Image (spheres, rainbow, N blue to C red):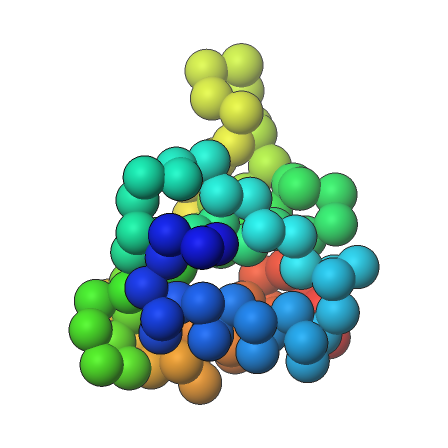
Length: 98
């Protein structure tokens, strides 16, 4: 997380603090990508990728458990121009936190 944008770090820290490390796991497979991070449920079956697109503006991509053998996940919905509050709502719903 050291390499990420300040906005992305603040959002990630806020979500983990509010919902707990046992409910949100950082799955950052791209250390060199400063604007994106993956946040997964504790089983790592559901993932929310969040990309920082500027002042309170995020892109969100959802991943679900695999359906076939082609990929280790199935592609979910994508959302553009989301605020931090909208990211929080979709994250807790997708990761089934509440």
